[in-house]
Length: 362
Ligand code: AMP
Picture (cartoon, rainbow, N blue to C red):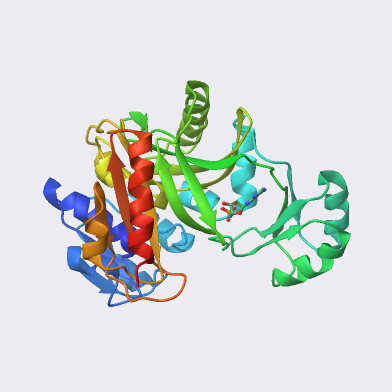
Protein backbone atom coordinates (compact mmCIF):
# COMPACT_ATOMS: atom_id res chain seq x y z
CA UNK A 1 0.00 0.00 0.00
CA UNK A 2 1.44 3.33 -1.06
CA UNK A 3 0.60 5.64 1.84
CA UNK A 4 -0.12 4.73 5.44
CA UNK A 5 -2.62 7.37 6.52
CA UNK A 6 -6.08 6.80 7.96
CA UNK A 7 -7.36 5.37 4.68
CA UNK A 8 -4.56 2.80 4.72
CA UNK A 9 -5.36 2.06 8.33
CA UNK A 10 -9.05 1.44 7.58
CA UNK A 11 -8.12 -0.71 4.56
CA UNK A 12 -5.89 -2.72 6.89
CA UNK A 13 -8.69 -3.06 9.42
CA UNK A 14 -10.97 -4.40 6.67
CA UNK A 15 -8.36 -6.75 5.24
CA UNK A 16 -7.21 -8.55 8.36
CA UNK A 17 -10.44 -10.60 8.78
CA UNK A 18 -9.99 -11.63 5.12
CA UNK A 19 -6.59 -13.07 5.97
CA UNK A 20 -4.65 -10.35 4.16
CA UNK A 21 -1.25 -9.05 5.13
CA UNK A 22 -0.08 -5.55 4.36
CA UNK A 23 3.11 -3.63 3.90
CA UNK A 24 2.72 0.16 3.89
CA UNK A 25 5.03 2.86 2.57
CA UNK A 26 4.81 6.20 4.34
CA UNK A 27 7.25 9.01 5.12
CA UNK A 28 6.20 9.05 8.81
CA UNK A 29 7.27 6.37 11.29
CA UNK A 30 4.10 7.17 13.25
CA UNK A 31 1.83 6.68 10.21
CA UNK A 32 -1.74 5.73 11.27
CA UNK A 33 -1.50 2.38 9.41
CA UNK A 34 1.66 1.25 11.20
CA UNK A 35 -0.20 -0.99 13.65
CA UNK A 36 -1.89 -2.91 10.79
CA UNK A 37 1.15 -4.36 9.08
CA UNK A 38 4.79 -3.80 8.24
CA UNK A 39 5.77 -0.19 7.58
CA UNK A 40 8.54 0.96 5.28
CA UNK A 41 9.45 4.51 6.23
CA UNK A 42 10.40 6.42 3.12
CA UNK A 43 9.37 8.95 0.53
CA UNK A 44 6.65 7.89 -1.90
CA UNK A 45 8.95 8.70 -4.81
CA UNK A 46 11.98 6.84 -3.45
CA UNK A 47 12.58 3.98 -5.89
CA UNK A 48 14.33 1.74 -3.35
CA UNK A 49 11.64 2.23 -0.72
CA UNK A 50 8.92 1.57 -3.30
CA UNK A 51 10.55 -1.68 -4.43
CA UNK A 52 11.14 -2.80 -0.85
CA UNK A 53 7.48 -2.16 -0.02
CA UNK A 54 6.04 -4.16 -2.90
CA UNK A 55 8.48 -7.08 -2.77
CA UNK A 56 6.57 -10.42 -2.72
CA UNK A 57 3.23 -8.62 -2.90
CA UNK A 58 0.20 -9.99 -4.75
CA UNK A 59 -1.11 -6.57 -5.61
CA UNK A 60 -0.15 -2.93 -5.07
CA UNK A 61 -2.68 -0.24 -4.26
CA UNK A 62 -2.54 3.32 -2.95
CA UNK A 63 -4.53 5.29 -0.42
CA UNK A 64 -3.53 8.80 -1.48
CA UNK A 65 -4.06 10.37 -4.90
CA UNK A 66 -0.94 12.50 -4.39
CA UNK A 67 1.27 9.41 -4.77
CA UNK A 68 3.88 10.50 -7.35
CA UNK A 69 2.83 9.08 -10.70
CA UNK A 70 6.40 8.26 -11.78
CA UNK A 71 6.94 5.91 -8.84
CA UNK A 72 3.66 4.06 -9.33
CA UNK A 73 4.38 3.80 -13.06
CA UNK A 74 7.86 2.41 -12.34
CA UNK A 75 6.27 -0.36 -10.27
CA UNK A 76 3.79 -1.13 -13.04
CA UNK A 77 6.60 -1.22 -15.62
CA UNK A 78 8.61 -3.59 -13.45
CA UNK A 79 5.78 -6.11 -13.58
CA UNK A 80 3.76 -5.32 -10.45
CA UNK A 81 -0.01 -5.17 -10.60
CA UNK A 82 -0.97 -1.64 -9.52
CA UNK A 83 -4.68 -1.12 -8.93
CA UNK A 84 -6.38 1.26 -9.68
CA UNK A 85 -4.33 1.79 -12.84
CA UNK A 86 -1.73 4.53 -12.93
CA UNK A 87 -3.65 6.18 -15.79
CA UNK A 88 -6.52 6.86 -13.37
CA UNK A 89 -4.00 8.16 -10.82
CA UNK A 90 -2.35 10.43 -13.38
CA UNK A 91 -5.66 11.82 -14.66
CA UNK A 92 -6.94 12.53 -11.15
CA UNK A 93 -3.81 14.60 -10.46
CA UNK A 94 -4.66 17.11 -13.18
CA UNK A 95 -8.01 18.90 -12.95
CA UNK A 96 -7.89 19.80 -16.64
CA UNK A 97 -7.32 16.20 -17.79
CA UNK A 98 -9.97 15.02 -15.35
CA UNK A 99 -12.66 17.44 -16.50
CA UNK A 100 -11.77 16.80 -20.15
CA UNK A 101 -12.21 13.05 -19.60
CA UNK A 102 -15.58 13.63 -17.90
CA UNK A 103 -16.79 15.78 -20.77
CA UNK A 104 -15.63 13.26 -23.39
CA UNK A 105 -17.79 10.63 -21.69
CA UNK A 106 -20.91 12.78 -21.62
CA UNK A 107 -20.62 13.56 -17.92
CA UNK A 108 -21.88 17.13 -17.32
CA UNK A 109 -19.32 19.55 -15.85
CA UNK A 110 -19.24 23.30 -15.20
CA UNK A 111 -17.82 25.27 -18.10
CA UNK A 112 -14.03 25.26 -17.84
CA UNK A 113 -10.91 26.38 -19.68
CA UNK A 114 -7.15 26.17 -19.25
CA UNK A 115 -5.30 29.27 -18.07
CA UNK A 116 -1.58 28.99 -18.77
CA UNK A 117 -0.53 32.61 -18.30
CA UNK A 118 -1.86 35.92 -16.99
CA UNK A 119 -2.62 37.00 -20.58
CA UNK A 120 -5.06 34.06 -20.95
CA UNK A 121 -7.12 34.92 -17.91
CA UNK A 122 -8.96 37.94 -19.34
CA UNK A 123 -10.06 36.06 -22.47
CA UNK A 124 -11.16 32.99 -20.49
CA UNK A 125 -13.15 35.17 -18.08
CA UNK A 126 -14.86 36.79 -21.08
CA UNK A 127 -15.83 33.32 -22.35
CA UNK A 128 -16.94 31.76 -19.07
CA UNK A 129 -18.19 34.84 -17.25
CA UNK A 130 -18.11 35.74 -13.57
CA UNK A 131 -18.41 34.54 -10.88
CA UNK A 132 -15.84 31.83 -11.55
CA UNK A 133 -13.28 29.75 -9.67
CA UNK A 134 -9.61 29.80 -10.58
CA UNK A 135 -7.78 26.65 -9.46
CA UNK A 136 -4.34 25.16 -9.74
CA UNK A 137 -4.46 22.18 -12.09
CA UNK A 138 -2.36 20.14 -9.70
CA UNK A 139 -1.91 19.70 -6.00
CA UNK A 140 -5.01 21.46 -4.63
CA UNK A 141 -7.01 19.69 -1.94
CA UNK A 142 -9.53 20.57 0.76
CA UNK A 143 -10.25 23.86 -1.02
CA UNK A 144 -6.59 24.91 -1.13
CA UNK A 145 -5.16 26.23 -4.39
CA UNK A 146 -8.27 28.04 -5.51
CA UNK A 147 -9.64 31.58 -5.69
CA UNK A 148 -13.20 32.71 -6.34
CA UNK A 149 -13.39 35.56 -8.86
CA UNK A 150 -16.55 37.61 -8.38
CA UNK A 151 -15.67 40.76 -10.32
CA UNK A 152 -12.84 42.13 -12.42
CA UNK A 153 -10.97 43.42 -9.37
CA UNK A 154 -10.49 39.82 -8.19
CA UNK A 155 -8.55 38.74 -11.27
CA UNK A 156 -5.13 40.08 -10.36
CA UNK A 157 -5.04 39.06 -6.67
CA UNK A 158 -6.67 35.71 -7.55
CA UNK A 159 -4.04 34.96 -10.15
CA UNK A 160 -1.21 36.16 -7.90
CA UNK A 161 -2.43 33.99 -4.99
CA UNK A 162 -2.06 30.79 -6.96
CA UNK A 163 1.69 30.70 -7.02
CA UNK A 164 3.77 30.45 -10.11
CA UNK A 165 1.06 31.85 -12.38
CA UNK A 166 0.64 29.00 -14.80
CA UNK A 167 -1.05 25.62 -15.17
CA UNK A 168 -4.40 26.85 -13.89
CA UNK A 169 -8.00 26.02 -14.73
CA UNK A 170 -10.90 28.47 -14.72
CA UNK A 171 -14.34 27.05 -13.94
CA UNK A 172 -17.77 28.65 -13.82
CA UNK A 173 -18.91 28.97 -10.19
CA UNK A 174 -21.74 26.46 -9.83
CA UNK A 175 -24.76 27.75 -7.86
CA UNK A 176 -25.29 24.29 -6.39
CA UNK A 177 -28.14 23.26 -4.10
CA UNK A 178 -25.90 20.75 -2.39
CA UNK A 179 -22.77 18.67 -2.80
CA UNK A 180 -23.08 14.92 -3.31
CA UNK A 181 -20.70 12.08 -3.98
CA UNK A 182 -21.08 8.63 -5.37
CA UNK A 183 -18.79 5.78 -4.41
CA UNK A 184 -18.43 3.02 -6.96
CA UNK A 185 -16.33 -0.11 -7.25
CA UNK A 186 -15.23 -2.26 -10.17
CA UNK A 187 -13.41 -5.55 -9.88
CA UNK A 188 -10.82 -7.01 -12.22
CA UNK A 189 -13.54 -9.20 -13.69
CA UNK A 190 -15.59 -6.12 -14.66
CA UNK A 191 -18.26 -6.47 -11.96
CA UNK A 192 -19.40 -3.01 -10.77
CA UNK A 193 -21.47 -1.74 -7.87
CA UNK A 194 -22.39 1.68 -6.49
CA UNK A 195 -23.33 2.77 -3.00
CA UNK A 196 -26.24 5.19 -2.51
CA UNK A 197 -25.48 8.87 -3.11
CA UNK A 198 -24.02 10.73 -0.15
CA UNK A 199 -24.75 14.35 0.81
CA UNK A 200 -21.63 16.22 1.91
CA UNK A 201 -21.40 19.39 3.93
CA UNK A 202 -18.08 21.26 3.83
CA UNK A 203 -16.83 24.10 5.96
CA UNK A 204 -13.68 26.08 5.15
CA UNK A 205 -13.01 23.61 2.32
CA UNK A 206 -12.96 20.57 4.64
CA UNK A 207 -15.62 17.84 4.71
CA UNK A 208 -17.48 18.06 8.02
CA UNK A 209 -20.57 15.85 7.74
CA UNK A 210 -21.81 13.25 5.25
CA UNK A 211 -25.34 11.87 5.26
CA UNK A 212 -26.08 8.58 3.53
CA UNK A 213 -28.20 7.81 1.68
CA UNK A 214 -28.47 11.51 0.80
CA UNK A 215 -31.83 12.75 2.18
CA UNK A 216 -34.57 13.49 -0.37
CA UNK A 217 -32.99 11.39 -3.06
CA UNK A 218 -34.95 10.74 -6.16
CA UNK A 219 -34.23 7.56 -8.12
CA UNK A 220 -33.42 9.54 -11.28
CA UNK A 221 -30.57 11.32 -9.47
CA UNK A 222 -29.17 8.04 -8.20
CA UNK A 223 -29.42 6.51 -11.69
CA UNK A 224 -27.65 9.50 -13.25
CA UNK A 225 -24.82 9.38 -10.68
CA UNK A 226 -24.37 5.65 -11.21
CA UNK A 227 -24.27 6.14 -14.97
CA UNK A 228 -21.52 8.76 -14.63
CA UNK A 229 -19.51 6.64 -12.19
CA UNK A 230 -19.79 3.59 -14.45
CA UNK A 231 -18.63 5.64 -17.45
CA UNK A 232 -15.49 6.64 -15.53
CA UNK A 233 -14.88 3.06 -14.35
CA UNK A 234 -15.15 1.72 -17.89
CA UNK A 235 -13.00 4.48 -19.38
CA UNK A 236 -10.07 3.58 -17.13
CA UNK A 237 -10.82 -0.17 -17.04
CA UNK A 238 -10.70 0.77 -13.39
CA UNK A 239 -10.17 -1.74 -10.58
CA UNK A 240 -10.96 -0.69 -7.01
CA UNK A 241 -13.10 1.95 -5.33
CA UNK A 242 -13.63 5.31 -7.03
CA UNK A 243 -15.27 8.42 -5.59
CA UNK A 244 -16.94 10.95 -7.83
CA UNK A 245 -17.77 14.34 -6.29
CA UNK A 246 -20.86 16.03 -7.72
CA UNK A 247 -22.82 19.25 -7.49
CA UNK A 248 -26.61 19.03 -7.53
CA UNK A 249 -28.31 21.92 -9.30
CA UNK A 250 -32.06 21.34 -9.43
CA UNK A 251 -32.53 17.93 -10.99
CA UNK A 252 -29.12 17.80 -12.61
CA UNK A 253 -25.69 16.71 -11.48
CA UNK A 254 -22.35 18.22 -12.50
CA UNK A 255 -19.13 16.32 -11.82
CA UNK A 256 -16.46 18.23 -9.90
CA UNK A 257 -13.68 15.74 -9.36
CA UNK A 258 -12.79 12.12 -8.84
CA UNK A 259 -10.62 10.40 -6.27
CA UNK A 260 -9.04 7.11 -7.40
CA UNK A 261 -9.28 5.60 -3.94
CA UNK A 262 -11.49 5.04 -0.94
CA UNK A 263 -12.89 8.37 0.18
CA UNK A 264 -13.81 10.29 3.32
CA UNK A 265 -17.43 10.50 2.14
CA UNK A 266 -17.54 6.68 2.15
CA UNK A 267 -16.52 6.12 5.77
CA UNK A 268 -20.17 5.66 6.76
CA UNK A 269 -20.15 2.36 4.82
CA UNK A 270 -18.21 0.64 7.64
CA UNK A 271 -21.32 0.49 9.83
CA UNK A 272 -23.96 1.80 7.43
CA UNK A 273 -23.69 -0.49 4.39
CA UNK A 274 -23.78 -4.23 3.84
CA UNK A 275 -20.17 -4.08 2.60
CA UNK A 276 -17.81 -1.21 3.37
CA UNK A 277 -15.85 0.69 0.75
CA UNK A 278 -12.67 -0.65 2.36
CA UNK A 279 -13.64 -4.31 2.12
CA UNK A 280 -14.95 -3.93 -1.43
CA UNK A 281 -11.78 -2.15 -2.53
CA UNK A 282 -9.74 -5.14 -1.35
CA UNK A 283 -12.17 -7.64 -2.87
CA UNK A 284 -11.98 -5.74 -6.18
CA UNK A 285 -8.20 -5.55 -6.42
CA UNK A 286 -7.92 -9.26 -5.58
CA UNK A 287 -10.51 -10.28 -8.24
CA UNK A 288 -12.81 -11.58 -5.53
CA UNK A 289 -16.60 -11.20 -5.81
CA UNK A 290 -17.87 -7.84 -4.60
CA UNK A 291 -20.21 -7.47 -1.64
CA UNK A 292 -23.60 -5.79 -1.71
CA UNK A 293 -23.51 -2.00 -1.41
CA UNK A 294 -27.00 -1.42 0.01
CA UNK A 295 -27.38 0.91 2.97
CA UNK A 296 -28.45 -0.50 6.32
CA UNK A 297 -30.82 2.15 7.62
CA UNK A 298 -29.53 5.73 7.49
CA UNK A 299 -26.14 7.04 8.59
CA UNK A 300 -24.17 10.19 9.10
CA UNK A 301 -20.42 10.56 9.34
CA UNK A 302 -18.99 13.47 11.33
CA UNK A 303 -15.29 14.24 10.90
CA UNK A 304 -13.27 14.96 14.03
CA UNK A 305 -10.97 17.81 13.09
CA UNK A 306 -8.12 19.18 15.20
CA UNK A 307 -8.40 16.96 18.26
CA UNK A 308 -10.36 14.05 19.66
CA UNK A 309 -13.35 14.35 21.99
CA UNK A 310 -13.85 12.32 25.17
CA UNK A 311 -14.62 8.81 23.85
CA UNK A 312 -17.12 8.15 26.64
CA UNK A 313 -19.17 11.23 25.67
CA UNK A 314 -19.32 10.17 22.02
CA UNK A 315 -20.12 6.54 22.75
CA UNK A 316 -23.00 7.54 25.04
CA UNK A 317 -24.85 8.76 21.92
CA UNK A 318 -27.18 6.01 20.61
CA UNK A 319 -25.96 4.55 17.33
CA UNK A 320 -22.55 6.29 17.53
CA UNK A 321 -19.32 4.55 16.48
CA UNK A 322 -15.98 6.22 17.15
CA UNK A 323 -12.95 5.94 14.86
CA UNK A 324 -9.66 7.26 16.23
CA UNK A 325 -6.95 7.38 13.55
CA UNK A 326 -4.09 7.41 16.05
CA UNK A 327 -2.83 10.81 14.90
CA UNK A 328 -1.50 13.60 17.08
CA UNK A 329 -3.80 16.63 17.34
CA UNK A 330 -3.20 19.64 15.09
CA UNK A 331 -5.59 22.42 13.97
CA UNK A 332 -7.36 21.51 10.73
CA UNK A 333 -6.16 17.88 10.81
CA UNK A 334 -8.61 14.99 10.40
CA UNK A 335 -7.90 12.88 13.49
CA UNK A 336 -10.95 10.63 13.49
CA UNK A 337 -14.62 10.38 12.68
CA UNK A 338 -17.90 9.32 14.25
CA UNK A 339 -20.54 7.41 12.34
CA UNK A 340 -24.08 7.57 13.68
CA UNK A 341 -26.59 5.05 12.42
CA UNK A 342 -30.38 4.96 12.83
CA UNK A 343 -33.45 3.32 11.36
CA UNK A 344 -35.00 6.53 10.08
CA UNK A 345 -33.97 10.09 9.18
CA UNK A 346 -35.76 11.82 12.07
CA UNK A 347 -34.11 9.51 14.59
CA UNK A 348 -30.73 10.12 12.93
CA UNK A 349 -31.13 13.90 13.19
CA UNK A 350 -32.01 13.64 16.89
CA UNK A 351 -28.92 11.51 17.48
CA UNK A 352 -26.76 14.01 15.56
CA UNK A 353 -28.02 16.83 17.77
CA UNK A 354 -27.04 14.77 20.82
CA UNK A 355 -23.63 14.12 19.27
CA UNK A 356 -23.14 17.85 18.57
CA UNK A 357 -23.70 18.57 22.25
CA UNK A 358 -21.26 15.80 23.23
CA UNK A 359 -18.60 17.19 20.89
CA UNK A 360 -19.09 20.74 22.17
CA UNK A 361 -18.55 19.70 25.79
CA UNK A 362 -15.16 20.94 27.14
P1 AMP B 1 -12.33 20.93 -5.03
O1 AMP B 1 -10.94 21.13 -4.52
O2 AMP B 1 -12.45 21.05 -6.50
O3 AMP B 1 -12.97 19.69 -4.48
O4 AMP B 1 -13.18 22.13 -4.42
C1 AMP B 1 -13.38 22.27 -3.03
C2 AMP B 1 -14.74 22.86 -2.78
O5 AMP B 1 -14.85 24.14 -3.43
C3 AMP B 1 -15.89 22.04 -3.34
O6 AMP B 1 -16.26 21.02 -2.46
C4 AMP B 1 -16.96 23.12 -3.52
O7 AMP B 1 -17.55 23.43 -2.28
C5 AMP B 1 -16.15 24.33 -3.94
N1 AMP B 1 -16.05 24.39 -5.42
C6 AMP B 1 -15.08 23.86 -6.20
N2 AMP B 1 -15.30 24.11 -7.51
C7 AMP B 1 -16.47 24.81 -7.58
C8 AMP B 1 -17.24 25.35 -8.65
N3 AMP B 1 -16.85 25.25 -9.94
N4 AMP B 1 -18.38 25.98 -8.33
C9 AMP B 1 -18.80 26.11 -7.04
N5 AMP B 1 -18.11 25.63 -6.00
C10 AMP B 1 -16.95 24.99 -6.23
